[in-house]
Image (tube, rainbow, N blue to C red):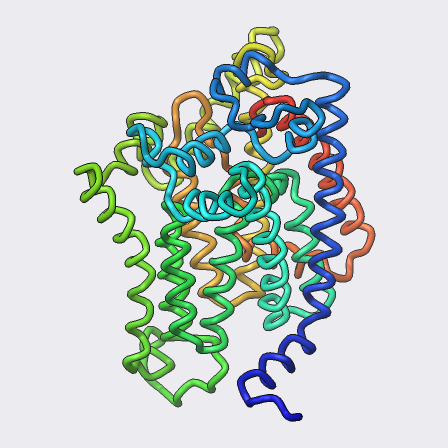
Length: 426
């Protein structure tokens, strides 16, 4: 019996792409084993930073079970900001500071908890499934511009990145990656309704999701797209593709942000609560474009003097890393970002480069006082053009690739151990 045309197309597409899913699944399993084994080894042999745990999670949301073994088994999935997502999933936006955390992810956790019976299990499951889907889509997207080896290396580099532990944690990282890559991939295939929908959901996931409007608009106007561009001899800035009614689907991107702000206006009378929370409660104040980089570089001499003199600034009781060390580590991740951006400039569509640039600018322009580039290594994860650029640069250089992947795997294990201990991950 012959299947209907839509089902036949879906079946053919699945068979054609199942290899990418199987590859992504192997990568996810292998890298999550590193995260889980390193985390559990640290928790079992070194314990946990009880001071940080009690301060950050007094309600015990990250250890909700009456089983020490089960709580330790799930320890790699929830620390630090995980508490906020779990709290919002259970109680909604109960405090002004919680408005900083956008609603889609905690909403999904709440829905999933009705099936699993646990917000913690639901959050980890959503993150892992989103990681698998995101890595699969990233491979397919990379194959549009890179060869097979570079596309696979893109996925491995990202999944093995030192802070990729957040992909399987109760954080928005995996969901944000999946939705943003899906939006770009749909745009490349000229499925503008799907691109706009994914973009809107991305904007409802994290504050910087609205930035996705830029690459989607650039792909719509300038490509590359499946259809050939119209012939034009005009100025470089003139659109290479005709503008039709389909461009209206891109309005769904800001609609995702507008929906959240509208909810806050109706429910709490505070439509700008996320931005107030970011500055007042979390200390992220605009310091000019890339102001965090400037402040970090200015702090380097004091950081070095503090380390040499033994007067480093402590993060908190029991935390093994000082603010001084973290500043220097941040500069290492900045070097990776710059290298990835330069490589992307030479090898990828300009829409990707623009997206990477504005994403970096947003992440590096609102520095808090204690660590100007705090969270930067985590913010890098969804900026997929950086990893595509580095993969293209490394492709064919086996020795260098082995060194990079080996170092990344070691750092992923170390950072996972710090995370499970309740230390602040660089």
